[in-house]
Image (cartoon, rainbow, N blue to C red; front, side):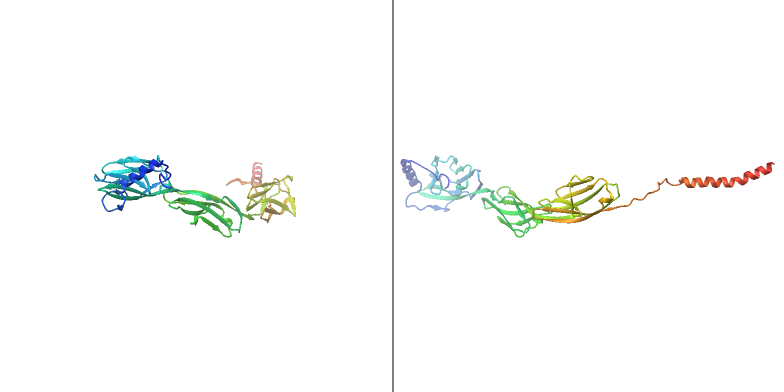
Length: 355
């Protein structure tokens, strides 16, 4: 429904309207368009929804009557407003120009508008088409989804706008950002854990900035242990065994030795669990602690395990280093005794000469 599409006038007004139309476009005279330099309406007018549209018509002093029409509805005839829509106002009515303005334009205002004039008993018209552009808007989009690895997913992003917006999907991940679809629908067959993350839907039509929404896709998969290395520790020292596992949902960890589960609170042993890491800590390693341990990681999709060894490392006693030129106490003592042995003959000779 265009401007003034809903126009309710008393029957007397309808009679007046009919009479004025007869004066404006006499019966039996064909309506001509484009056969003279006037009236000359502007080219097609393109405005965004909510803006104002100005419709101008160039005329000359031979024109006796003028009017603006929207399809079959009269908006203005001369200076008289025939439309009840308060958004339609007269801008100018001079010997050279006849123009109106439609404020706060909406999509139902789009369509043809006619400038009609009367001169020398010949009606003439010129037409302009009003085009209304609408910013893109995403009206429907899939919710965040959690799915098991290997299953199929379908994401939907419905957008409206004038002209019709282009919809694209992108995968946002720490490794890369890439286009995955140029359609309202995104289908992924046999999804993998690498395909988890945010999927961004963008709707654009060059009327305004693109509209962007995101859908979070969580891909569930069973645990796999990425790191589990044995370690060597001397007796009496602190030792730690580590077990790292990747999983969605996060894995739960358990530790075993010789098929016996180690529980929190055992004297001298502590278990620290994080979402992707578990530590088995020995505060004072004894001979009894050495051996093979099993780390088990599990979630609702499955479990896995790895064997880790705590082994003994022997310590060696080292003589303290005293720096260059230092002489050990053993060598120093030997040197003093050697000196005394060489002095003894000299003392004997001295005594013999004296007597």
